[in-house]
Each structure stands twice: as C-alpha cells, then as structure tokens.
Amino acid sequence: MKTILITFFLSLSTFTSFAQDNTNTEKHMEFKGIPIDGALNEYVSKMKKEGFTLVGTESGIAMLKGDFAGYKNCIVGVATLKQKDLVSKITVIFPESDTWSSLSSDYFYLKELLTEKYGEPAEVVEKFNTRSEPRDDRDRMYQVGMDRCKYYTTYETEKGSIQLSIDHESVMRSYVTLSYFDKINSKIIREKAKRDL
Image (cartoon, rainbow, N blue to C red; front, side):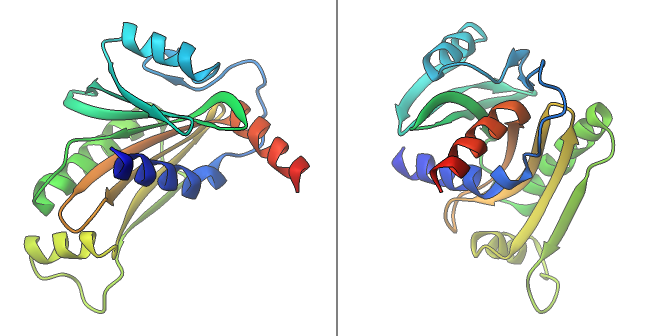
C-alpha cells in the first residue's frame, strides 16, 4: 500500500506542471460526473456513492478501488496537499499487465476513447529510450520495468489537463495510468506554493 501511495504521489508531482492558468473560474473538471473540488473526506463520500470502496488514506491521498471505463478493480487515487485540504488531482491505476501486447492495447484503447471525447491531444510521446527498438514482447516489458518506456498522451481542456501513460512500480508491475488535473484548484495550490517561496 505504501509503495502504491508513494508511486502515485510521485507521478502526480511529475505531472503537476501540465496544469495551466485558469480561464474559466466557474467550472471544475469532473471525474465520473463529480467535480474535482472540495475536501478529501467529502470527495471520498461522493466516490463511495459511485460504487468505489475506500482502501486507505495517507498523507493527503485517498486510495479507492472500483470499476472504471469498463475495467474491473481499478485503483483510484484522490490527492490533495497536506497544507490545503483541497482535491485537485485524480489518478486511475488500471489493472496490471504482464505482456506488452495487453499493456499497449489498454493504452491505445483508452487513448482512442479520450481522443473521441476531448479531441486531438496536446502532446504525445511514444518511444523507448533505448539504442535500438526492442525486439519482442518480452524485451518491451523489460524496458518498461527499467523505466526506458516513455508512452504518454496529454489532453488540455478549459477545465484542466488529462494525461494517459504507461507506468510501472517495479520490474514486475506495469500498468496504464490516467490522471486528471483540475485547473482551478491546481492554480490555487500553485499560488499558495509561490507565496511560500
């Protein structure tokens, strides 16, 4: 559980830079129809009503489990900063894949759905940082586990950013993640951090 929380928090920290200045101060990005806003406990209560089960809460992150986008037993992380109990980021960790064919299939399927809903992505990086292209399924999975696989797609909307990526926790655990960054609350948190500097 701690490893998943740490991995989740680090991935959220990495992608916070994708949140841009707010142009629409009235509406928050939504996740499963719920605006990404409010206190963590309130948001968790709303997620429970949507059929998710609370796994645990630690360091301003609530981990829930449930079905999402046709996938069973996804882990959903709801994040705030400790200094401000304000939900601003949601990350879905899809079920693990043990082959490149299933991992990449999940990634490209979700990318297709996201593109249908949000339009063309703002940024796409899909490559292996290796001297030569991996030879086969097993070699590709090895490169994922060694952090040499850079597959991510970012969508920008008026309400925030969405990023789909292939990630891993160790050499043995690889999965697709989908992160939502609410523009309004990301800006509030960013401004608070700038005041502290």
